[in-house]
Image (cartoon, rainbow, N blue to C red; front, top):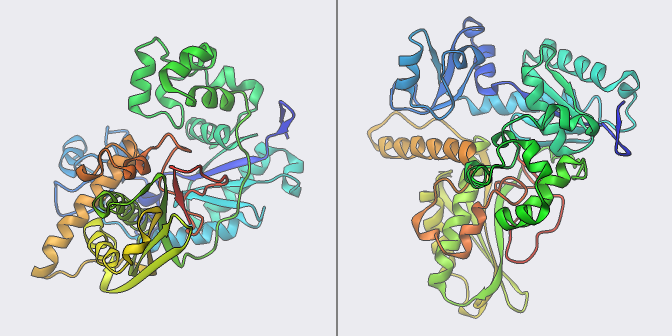
Length: 434
C-alpha cells in the first residue's frame, strides 16, 4: 500500500468502460468486440449517440455525435437502443460485488463508484494486486470491463482512473509524490473539474498544462478563477477530500433545493428558480432511467417555517416541461404568508423505471421532447451543466444551480445510488440537495 504525504492510497475509483455499450453487448453477444453505439432512437439518423464502444471510438465516433455522422465515419457501426432497466440491474449487481471488499461504496454516477479500502484485508497484498483481482471478478461474474484508479484522495483516484484506461492492466496507482510525473505533462483540459470555459481562460495566460497550473502563482490564479485556483493546487498536492460515504440502496424520491442569499418576496422572481430546480430533478431522473408521479414543492419562509404541497400526476414524469407546470400549480397552493422565502425545493417521488414511450400518434411529441432532453443531458455531461440553460433562468438565483465549479457538478443527491453525493454542508446561496 503506497503512502504519500502521510496518507495511504486506499481510495479506489471503479469505472465501467463504455457502460451502455458494454451492457448492450451483454444483452446481445453478437455485438461484442464490434463498433457499437447506443443512440436514443436507432432508426433516426438525427438521434444522438449516448455512448460508443472503444471499437467505435477508433473510427472517430464520439458521445453526443449525431447518429448519421457516426454512421458516415463507420459504415459497419452497430446501433442499439438504450435500456435503463438493464443499466440499473448491472449497477446493482456490481454494487453487490464491490461490497464484498468494503462496505464503503459510494456511487457518483451510474457507472462510477468510489471505494475506501482502508483496513480491508485485500489491501494486504498491495493496492495494484487488489484492484486487479477486483477488476477480474467483475469481468468474470458480470461481464463488465472496468478501469480502476487508486490514490489517497477522491480527485487523484479519479485522475488515476483516466490513466487506467490507457494501461494494459486496466488499473493505475497514483501516489501523491508521482503526481508531477504522471499529471503535470497533461493538457489543462484533462484536469477533472476544469471545463472548456475555464481551460480557455487559463490558456490565454499560458497555463496550458496541469504542471503550469500547479506552478502558477497563487495570486495569478486567484485573479483568473478565484478560490478555485487554490483548491485545484491543493488537490494536486494530495490535500483534497477522501471521505467515501456509502450510497443508499434504493431511492424513494429525487429532490433538489436552493437556499437563497437574499429572501425572495416576488412570486415572479421565484418562477425561474423553480424552473431551474425542476430541470435539475428532471435531468437526474433521466440519468437514472427513472420517472415519478408525485411532485412536491417545498417553501421555507424567513421564520424557518416549512410549507410543502404535493400532487399526483396521471402519468410518470421525467421531462422539465412536464414537471415545471405541476410545480407552478403547487406554488398557487402555497399560502401568501410563505413569502418572502429563504429556500425552495422541488422533488419527484413514486419512482419507477422509465418505460419506453408507446408507439402511438399521441406519443410522437413526447418522444421528440425525450430525444431533445437526452441530447441536452449529453451536451451538459460533456461540456458542463451550464452549457445549455433555459433562457428565463439567466440572471436569476436559479442559474447558480448549474455552476459546475461547485464540487464538479450540480446534479447530486444523497438518496439515489449511481449519483454524486455531497459530504459537506452548503453555504447560503448555494445549490443543495436532500
